[in-house]
Image (cartoon, rainbow, N blue to C red; front, side, top):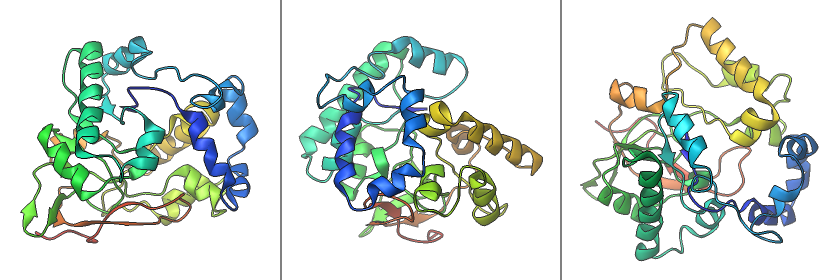
Length: 271
């Protein structure tokens, strides 16, 4: 579970509604059902017309419960919207402060240091990866790709394993019209999941958690029926499964996504 440690600024994300065709795309996710699952419209104005409540910091009992149930808790930045929109503009000092603040909050809640972090909206860059090295995470999940790998550029090889998301998200498949909620899990299994590769899927609390939890139930049922072993990233890394070689990173668009994300440059990775 990657948790935003600071403010809930969902209202800031609504700026995307000004983008061409965004309304058409988001309508396929059923925003009215999403509003109902959030208990009303108030959360959609956090950080704009309404003050921002804290997420991880504001709900330490939830974070502790996640951990108590045997799940690993990782960092997902201090301010999700700010990171997603400004990560390229943040200074080194600002980036370090973001991680330091998250680690401090995390430690106050769980009494330990986090072993992992994931960049909001898969937005990262080489400078951020170098700064993350300073915090000695066990593994990271900052980008999209096809295999677990160690970032490499210009002869410099980083020591922290990246476990990228390899599969499209549910909402990406819905927003660009590739699938409907009635067949999206079947679509992902039939078109993207392969037994001979690393299959990493991101579950979002706002869709598979609150709005349409039956999608997650169907995913897990389908995986079990198909003989797949469902594990979290920590188990994957600890087993040393899916470890790749070395790859540089780049940026680009993914089908159904909004804006560019960070990508594993090499398809397989170099040994």
